[in-house]
Image 1: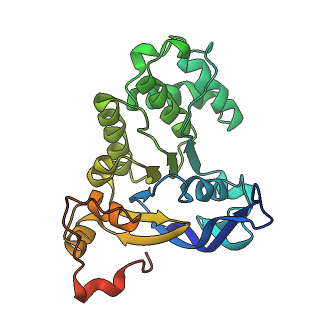
Image 2: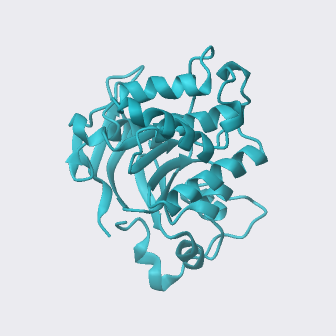
Length: 266
């Protein structure tokens, strides 16, 4: 399979608040996401996940390294034409209805007028908001707002979806609906790259994951393979990577035959 998204030796720094020393947000990051897979990008707060997404979306420029989407440098606007993006906070215009919001985004993408209405109907059906298409977004629940966010990310029929914490703040039903949507997108051959703290969701929907800590990928691979390698579930692997060890739990054991795979190339 070809890599839809690729990052090589990425380094991003921010100015330090109280010192002349910069804050390193991403440090030598290497990453590759294959076509048609669902890839989970994990890590604690401050690990560098959102910074990496900003680089991929062209919002931020690294001081070192490079990133490509569909083989095009992310610094080129054309690289983002085939992307759909869902930010962590879906603060859309509250006095628009769902269909009005989607028409607005369709216009931004210059989607032909004869295509717009069938496209809106399709994405609303996918996110299960057909019955609420004429309701004001301000009347939507958190879960519904997240789903209309997914709808806008899909309005241009992207080949790559980049989702920042798509299930953040949702109740179990809301998380289930978002999970089902991601699984449907995988069935359509879409590539989905998303950051998340919801490890249970990640285990359910992802083909592969990478765990980021202090700006570096520390563990990467298929979830079943990682669980066999580290003799524990994804939550325990995550906690070990970030340096937390519960006093009431046994330490994780890594298979010595595969120990050199830790932090290896994706």
